[in-house]
Image (cartoon, rainbow, N blue to C red; front, side, top):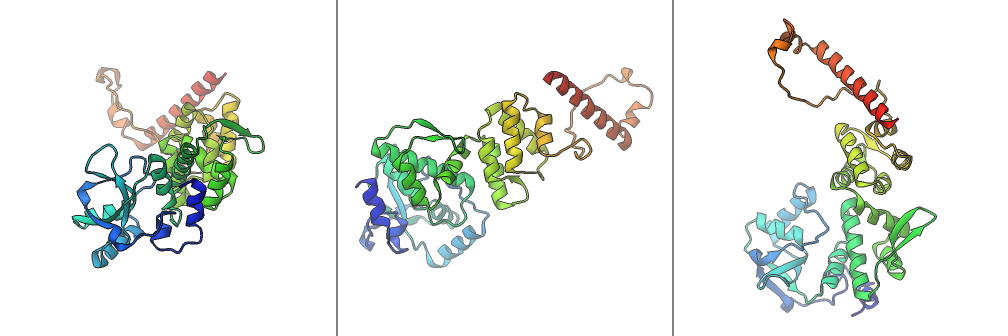
Length: 330
């Protein structure tokens, strides 16, 4: 079955098993098998997080406890481990089953190639209402790479001169993906670019989706994704020191410009965030070192415990490090 045939088959289907399977023909009860929980394995490139602390997961556990698993898991035989099965759809149900101590779960065993398995994994989650930016980023990328494999299109690079976006040369597949996931082509490119973020920064993008007042906005994350790995480490270090800060798109663009100008430093990041010396909260990291008591003047040990002395020392260190960094830039 070609990609176009699969997509056509899934159009207009109801919300039953056929739509859950994203284009696999509807199955009857005889095709459902009870498989041991211990025989199932998560898909190696599974793109979704199983959030066991969410209200959705708690409701699912309660539902399975009272009524069992109503929607069978979609699995395929594990190509690397005889006797085992790889989960294509149903990771959360499988996790809940383990929590409840179930020994078997209802499954549909499908014969799928690696590319088809990736496509199905993505399509079974299209209806998710609460997926995170990182999940979207990985899902769109996996889906497109699988379609490229299936259609024989090799991945190249092109530059969209209107947005500065570097994205795979996907042609028709890119348009099909955008339509399939119900988003615009530029939005698709934006999420795929998020895969270039270091894990710490991508987690901050997810954090913003859960709390809009902190973390990194999606559009800002897209801009930061163009930074080099070293520059991303600098940004992550500063944001880690100021967890209450929200990185916006305009600020992220300023960071890109600073890198292009050759001076994306800690001071530059703090400046882009609007953290002037007067506004910066005093956040000192503890540094431990041994000083021979003979070098300390009388009463110095008591002085180091004085809060005023600690504040003055912290201010001096900040000013000194600022001068050192400025001298380095020059």
